[in-house]
Amino acid sequence: MRMFPKLPWVALALLAAGPVFAQDTAAPEVVTEVASAIDSGDTAWMLTSTLLVLFMTIPGLALFYGGLVRSKNMLSVLMQVTLVASVVMILYVFYGYSMSFGGSDSPYWGGLGKVFLSGVTPDSASGTIPELVFAAFQMTFAAITPALIVGAFAERIRFSAVMLFTILWVTLVYFPIAHMAWDPAGLYFNWGAMDFAGGTVVHINAGIAALVGALVIGPRIGYRKEIMAPHSMTLTMVGTAILWVGWFGFNAGSALSAGGLASLAMMNTFVATAGAVVGWSVLEAVLRSKASMLGAASGAVAGLVAVTPAAGFVGPVGAIALGLIASACCYFFVNVVKEHLGYDDSLDVFGVHGVGGIVGAILTGVLASSTFGGVGYADGVTMGAQLLVQVKAVCVTIAWCGIVSLILYKLVDVLIGLRVTPEIEREGLDLAEHGERAYVY
Image 1: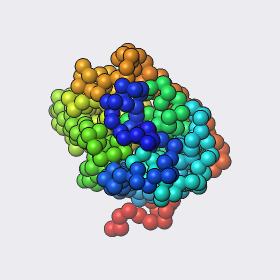
Image 2: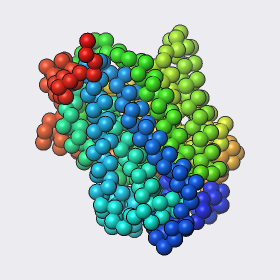
Image 3: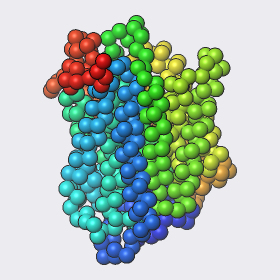
Image 4: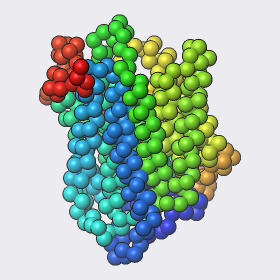
C-alpha cells in the first residue's frame, strides 16, 4: 500500500531505486495544484476496493466469528465487530489519519498536522487518486484490525470493555505501527521492510493483542470440560466466502492503482488461499481421517493472512507455496501448541492471524526473490539482508503491541472491568449485554 506521490507506480523501477511498499503509493505529501493528476480508472478501482474491505468486515468477519461461537453469544459478536469498526472510523477522521500519514518526520508517528482531516479536500490528490479516497481506504484497514481481536476473548468480555480497549489500542498501537510500515518517514519503511497490505500492521498486531487478551482475561467457564462447538458452520462458511472476496480489495487494492501490480496481487490472493485450503484439508484427512469445513475455513483465512504482506512481491507459484506452508504452521499451532499450553483463544485469532502473519511477513523476504518468481529486491539487497529486515519488523511489532496491549488490558480492567460475571457468561452475552437474542424460537 505504498506509493511515491507525483510519480506513476511502476513496481520494478521503484524496486530498483529503493524499497517499495504498496501502502506507500499514496504518501502523505499531497498534490493540491493538479486535479488532473487524478486518474479516473485508478480512483474507480480504489473506491471499489474500499467498499470490498468494508464488506469483509461487515458482514464478512462478523458472520465468520458469529458462526463459530455458541448461539447465546452470536449477537454479541455481531455487535462487537460492528461497533468496533464504527468507532474506529470516527477516530480515524479525528486523528487516526494524521497519526498515520500526517506528514511528520518522526519514524514513530505522523504528527497532528491533519487532525480532523485538515487540508484533505476533494481536490487534493495522493498519487493518482483523491486523498479522501486514500484516507477512506486506510480507514477500513484500521477498522477491521481491532475487530479481528475480539475473536480471542469472545463469549466472556464486557461490551464496554471492548469499546474502551479499542479506543486506546488503535491510538497507541495501530496508528503508530501503520506509520512505521507505510509512511516514507516510518521506521520499517526506512529499513526497507516489505509489507504490501498489512502483515505486521494488521495481522501480527491483531494476533499479538488477541493472545495477550486471552491470557489476561482467562478461559471461558467450562473450557476443555464442556462442548463449545460452533453453532453454525453454515454462517461461518458464508463469512469465509465474504472474507475471501473482500480480501481482493485488501490486497489488490493495496496497489492503489488499476494496473499490473493489482493483477499480480489478485492472482496471488486467489492461489495462496486455494493452496492453504487444500493444505489444511489434506493435513486433517491424513492426521484425523476427515477433512472438516471448519478446517477448510481456517485454512482459507490462514492463506489470506499469509499472502497479505507478500501479495505484490511474490509470484503465483511462490504464493501457492506460501499458502501451503502457512496452513501447515497454523494447523500445528492451533491443534498442537495451543492444546498443549491450554490457553483459551476462543476463535484462534493468534493461531491463524498471528502465526500466519509472522510466517507471511518473514517468508516474503525469501519468496520475493526472482529465483522463486518474485519481483526481486532493491539494488544491492541480498535475500539474507531482506530476511533480516523482515525479522526486525516482526520483532518490533510483537514487542510494541505485546507490551502496550498488556498495559491497556490491565488499565481497562482497573477502570471498568474486563469480564462479565459468571452468571452472565452462563446465560450468554446476547441477552445480558444487549437485551436481545440473535435467534427467537
